Amino acid sequence: MDEGNRLFRAKHYAEARAQYESALRVQPTLAEAHYNLARSLDYLGDPTGARKHYLEAANLAPGHKVIWDSPPLSKYGREVETMPSGDSNAPPVMPALGGLGGGGGGPGY
Image 1 (cartoon, rainbow, N blue to C red):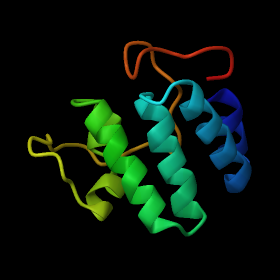
Image 2 (image 1 turned 90 degrees about the vertical axis):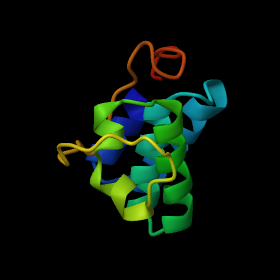
Image 3 (image 1 turned 135 degrees about the horizontal axis):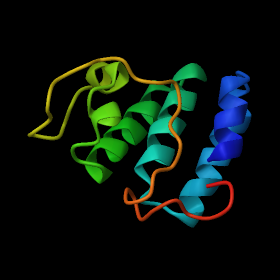
Image 4 (image 1 turned 45 degrees about the vertical axis):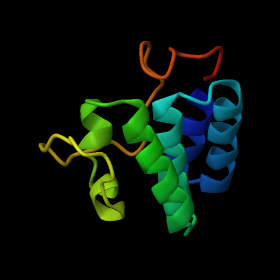
């Protein structure tokens, strides 16, 4: 995750995507990795792939304010029935947080 976030901030979206995909191979339920992968896919012009991962992130982390309140999730449609409303200021990428999606994974995830 850390390397993916570094690459994303440097606008190397394809390389960031590869890092998030690698994190998801290790820990497929890591909501933050799905969210960040979706952001990368958005920038790479893959709205279908982005939508899939935004929704997966929301489903894996019910109540995670950054994910649920993110403008991209609104853009792609909310398929989860009880989505809270609120602030729409979402950061471009998110670090892995313990307790969501099974924790932080391992070094770099």
